Structures are given as structure tokens and as C-alpha cells.
Image 1 (cartoon, rainbow, N blue to C red):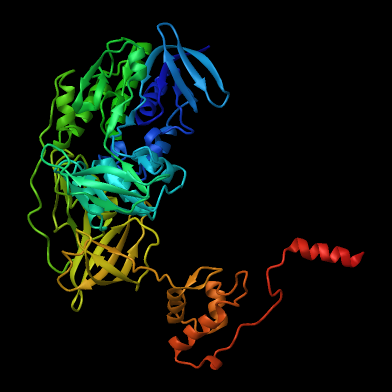
Image 2: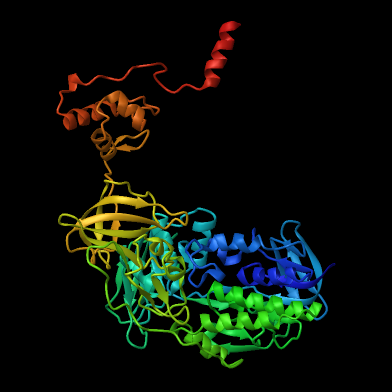
Length: 600
């Protein structure tokens, strides 16, 4: 039997935050987590967090997991790949997958922070391979580097659906559309804008009707719905996709809490059945606490705060240390994070347990666009969401988020130096740098960019507007790379378009392949010639042209023809490459074997 003062079930943001606080105060703590590594959902989150710096705003989720784990001290023990299988009156049982054995745990206090499960929806053929939950897609893609498919239909426009759609685009998949059964986007406006300007339509008042395919998903049929969310016959549309990703919400994982006789209440605003708890995260069972998505579906930031409160409260119980002021500080943090309009539903749900408070925030919007002709930021953040990295990152104090972090940012352009740091820090990618008349008849727009490859100075790109429509050809003037991987790509556009252009895409690569061994296209050869590689041997060395198994037998003539056309020379004026043996790939093993036979 394993004995511990404080058992934490779940090593996600809530569990880790609780362990940090308990460990600091000398409480012997054990974290049990069924994952391969600690971090929970943070491990699969590659986007930057909102909020403020105290809770890792503008830091990516998987990096937050590392920062939290690094704060655990010697008082905290960890058992990974282990699942709590039952909570009984006198004992807790767990299964260790590494040792394939069940063991017992005795704990004075327990924090259940096991998170939530994905909410699935019924539709025809939803059993087919290719139908995934958004969390599963994130796990495959962001943790195990496996792209589940190339063409995706996303179902659900909450923050998870929008974020995973963006991550799928970053990974190279094509998101055909996002369908949303309600009449408005469920997630943050800044997330929706990121998706739309990359050309992904968000179809409101639509839902999925069925998956097409026999052995796996080959397509999807969606249908429009009426004001009561009933399908409207005759409005069906078909998409050719190989993945249907379901992002229709989360359900608190209440099983262990129920086994422990924690009182459950059905509160739809919190995600369904949730455990009762007070404002210190204690349930009706005096030695059992809950935190994170189990206590109500929210974001990881509030999970961290709730975890801290639980860790502090348990520390007080076990050691007698006075932590009241620290608990109250964290409770104020929760009030501030939940004061905005997006948290109204959560506040209404929590009212069932205890009185909710709010703080004032400003809805005042930026009234001017700054001095024409000066390089400056334009902030397109129009919703009151808890976030302020634009303010805290500004080196001159030009940006203010008044009263609390739910207020809208306001720029004092007289203080702005046009450095662009705010644009690289903004988690919503909602800040753009613009300058009119950067060159004669050319404006400049800086786009926050998180894709690969990163374009280079002088490269031509296709400029897009807010809806992802093509606007014009643009030229990359400068790239400012950032350690946080949100780079700023400055592109010049025709005069008058600096307020229209908000994204770009790279020109589509030619499908015309010349060297099939090394997968070198006509475009790549022509670009290399334009760069000055005007000799066939130079092209070989630069591109590895003709250096595959065929030795150039297939591509040499085509490449020389392209070279002749691009340089205006005749084919017989272009030197061939130097021919060296072997004429085909030969294994060293075969050469050695031949030598040994020869010696005998």
C-alpha cells in the first residue's frame, strides 16, 4: 500500500498547480496521472494562452506544462501511466500500466482533477474510421506528429473547434469548412477571424447529417437547420473529406467523484453533471476537493487558479499554515477572469453553489487609427476577453487595457515606436502593423505568421482579405522572426490596401515534377536559374538534381531544356555534368563482398 498526505488524481493544469502549492508547504503529495507525461491537455495545445503574464499569457500550452512540472519539488511524487480505478470508503485502488499491476493507496486528502471527456453527437455512419473527436486529433497531430487526414470537416465552432482547425491548417491539412448548428460562432471572435482570413468558411445554422463511406470516411453530408435546430430537408450539401472532426463540447468526468459520494448536480452551464464544491474547491466530502474541467468546463487558466486554491486549502488543513490571504488573492483572480461576457454562462452555473462577483471592465473601443504614413499597430480585438499581453509587452507603455484584463486595448499613438512586439505577443493574432506610402504607390502590412515555410524577402505572395479572398499580389519586404514562433512578415501591397489585406498565402507549387527521384519541380529549377544557377552542374549541386537512383537518365534532358529556355541559349551550348561511376546505386556491402571474392 502507498500512503500519502495528499493524493492528486490528474496531472493537468489544475493538478500540477495544486501540487506546486502543497509541495512548497512541505505536504507529502502524490500525483497519479494516466498519461505518458504530466501536463494533461496542455501537452497537445500548441496555441498561445490568453490571460495575463501571471498565468502564462502568450505562452504555448505545451510550454506551460514544462514550466509547471519544473516547479514541483522533492515533496511531490509522481506516478505516470497509472489510473485510479476506484475510490472506496477506506481505500483507493490504482492500476499501473507499466507494471501491469493493481495497488492500493491511503490518502488523508484527495484532489480529483481528472478533466473532461469529449461530447459526441449521433449521426449516420458516425462509427466509421475517420470520425474523430477534436481532442483525439490534437493528440495525434500535436503529440505524436500524425496527421489524421488531408481534408477535414470540422463540426463545432467553439474555441476548441476553431483552434484545432487552425492547427490542422498549420500541419498542412485542408479544412473544407466549419459547421455550427447555432446562429453564432461559439468561440472567440479573434480565433474565428484567424480561420476565416485563411479561407475557411464558417457555416452557421448547419450540422452534419451523415458520413459517407463503407470502410472509412470518404465524405460528409451537412444540412441547414431551422431556428429550432431541426434539419431542413433539401438543403443538404456534400463535402469530399477523409476526416470529420467533432468539436461539440466537453462533459466533466464525474465517475471518481461519484464513487467517493460527492454530491452531483446537473448544471448545463458548467457542462452537465458536476460535483458540488465551495469557493475553496472543497466538496461535501470534507477531505475531497475538485478542480479544473471536472468542476465546470472552462479554460486551462481558471483550472490553474482553482488548482492553486485547492492546494492552498489542503496545505492549511494538513500543516496549519495561514494561507488565507493567498487563497483570497486567487479567488480575486477568478473573479477577474470570469468578469467578461464570455464567462456569463459559467457565473450563472456557479451561482448554484455560491454567490458570484464581477469587476467592471471597459467596452470603449479605439477611436482613431493613428498618424497616416507612420508604421503603427492596428488592433482588431473587438470582444471583451480576459487578455492583456499587448499592454504588458509594449516597451513604451503605448497600449492600455483599462480597469481589468477584460477591457478592450487602447493605443496612444504618440508613444508608439512601431516595434511590432505587441503583434508578435498577441495570442489572438489580432494586431497588424501598417504603413501607408511605404514606397511610391505601395503600402506596407505586417502579418503575424505561424506557418512553415517562412517566406523570404523578395518573395511574391498572394494577399488575402478578412474573408480569405484574394486581393492582390504582394512582395515580402522583411521578416521579423520571434522566439515564440509568431513571426511578423512585412508585405508591400498596392496603395490603399493596407486596411484590407490581413493574410497571405504562398503561391501554389507546380505539380510538374522534373526529377522524380529527388522530387524537384519545374518551379524549383526555374527559381534556381533566376537566382543565378545557370549551369547544369551548378543546378545538380544546388538542388540534388539527377542525384537519385536513376542518375539523371530521366531528368537530365528536361532540366537542360528548361535551362536553355530560361537563359536563351541553345541546348548544345549547355555543358553536361561530369559523369562518374557507379552508373547506378551499388551497396557498399556488394562492393566489399566482391573484393573479398577477388582476393580469394
